[in-house]
Image 1 (cartoon, rainbow, N blue to C red):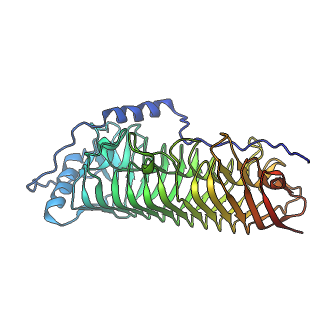
Image 2 (image 1 turned 30 degrees about the horizontal axis):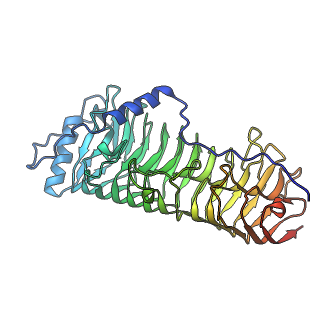
Image 3 (image 1 turned 180 degrees about the vertical axis):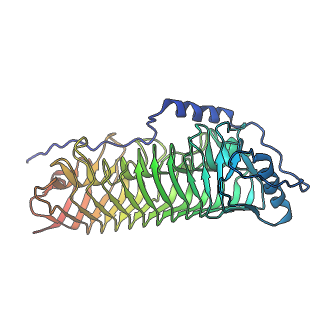
Length: 445
């Protein structure tokens, strides 16, 4: 029996900071979590008119408008002015608040987070029925401590069950840029919709976490992010990331972690998430589920109808994921000269995964070691009882010279069922030598 040895694709880590200064600031914000937020008013405050000349401190005036809106039922309208409004501290957003931002709101260089409020708009703990929308711009001015729109407060760090989740929150149509921290970071929120938002040129990306349920991230444009562009972490369930364009990410384009809130059972890991209809390019990894073998594993993740191309490592990976599907995606031109043996689709340490009806071509750019689909086990025993079903995929290389060596490659000590796949003549099928594999595939010219 012949044996084949190939280098294993690296499993990307999205938490590899490139800037110690910003990392230390983020840790300081986590340490500050649990401090008291300002108290939402019970009687309407006196409303003052913001100057919004680009120089004056408009924080108090904007706050009075937003607090009043939570009590009188009318939206707070942030005006469009030639030079925009300026803030020096977070604006608290209470329940029953609608904000229509038509103009520009910028953080002054003296802007600073206050206790556990760290966003330019910061939702009060347990806020319900909040809507922030409009065609305006939130500009963090690259202030190291600034974030755009945030919720969760003390849920940063360990998630306390005594803190109620925010409910029914919509963020729509904003452009959020130049954040030293997060354009959007929403923790502990049910029925969240982030729709039509552009987030760019910031250190972190759009992050949703801490037992958030029923989140819909749709029609997003995320680019120019030093770390991961879109990230779901610590117990996000029944949620979707769809119809978005993600590019120029220092780490993962769309990352669904396998973790859970600290102190919660494994059952609270990320689960039942759909990543559908997105375009992800020019990231370290395109779309990834999990980070490394661990006791908490994401389950029920459906990755379908996405395009992942020109990423520096692999296109789509589950590392690990249980009872997950990767279907009807297109990956191509992933990998680079510094990252050999990169596949279009990677399945690592996973159980009961279906990889079906995907089109994978011209992988391994800058090398001759590109792969179509790779199934590996980096932590022996994790995949015991696994069954990986790979069916109906099209894998080819139409370049001259070719950059791909293998259509399918596996080192998993468990059955791989590989049927009905078509791949180019000359691409090797390493699954032929995997333990317990079933083969019924077709070569195409």
